[in-house]
Length: 361
Image 1 (tube, rainbow, N blue to C red):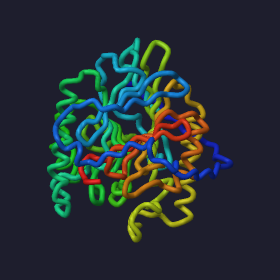
Image 2: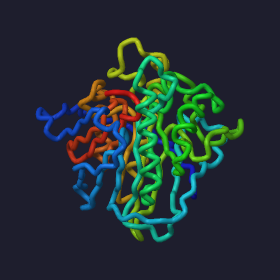
Image 3: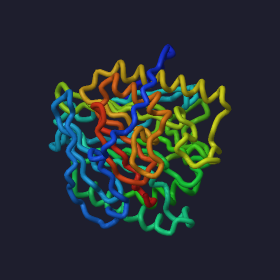
Image 4: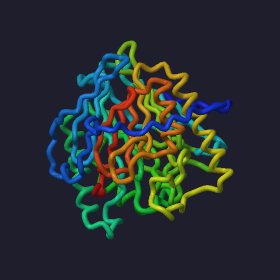
């Protein structure tokens, strides 16, 4: 795996403020409660999402409380993909930096890429107040393991945040790394690419960052990849085609957010610092999408832009992120936060929620 650091220097000068409401009819919104997927069945569902620009197909399959996504086709290339780390980050602050990682282990590429997406999954025995969380997360992890073992085309796992409940982790040696991740998902021999959720920010979010700094390298699971709070992956899926996945920290854009219960502001920054980071993250997202030459563009975050779930849509993302998705012809926005599995198509973008990893919706 080849890794290239990418820093941006120009601030975005203006942002669109287009807070379009959800369509009055929810016929195009597919929302399914978590309880529908607790049985260990690998069942193809009627979820087929067509790109308006590239005339290719994104196919979704329900996999317990996670979603299996194939981009560009279901015949997938082989090759020995090994997890790796981002380059040494020097003195850069993870929150303010970005990395671009090229995954070119299969030289000729192939017609597609397939990955499992799981969100809001950070409960095992550490969530005693929610009786079903332990057994639900175990069911999801077992089904994902079966899928990884039986489907050689699956190349990676992508998380949509809330990796550790209820208040993130405090260090790279926090017991939750073993309890939540290694003991439950350690048999899934695939690289994991993560983003942070609001619960991750209630701890020490830097403790989940996998890149090295001047202070040394973290002692994290070898297949855990979160090189910076914002980063992107570029994967070759054919001789002349690529998929770029832009993974972002939506907490930097929306803080505790207006869709989080009142009073839950533990991770919030002072107003001035929050605005500065928000501007820097919007700038990074805008520039990364602007300069992308990929045939497919997928953005991954935690908070939803649109959702029919309990938390609902995030006004801050409708103001700051949604215009960028539309401006740069992004194919899919993948997120979590609501503990359901949903698919919504709106103004040319497929909005997919995968937040059924442990908690009931």
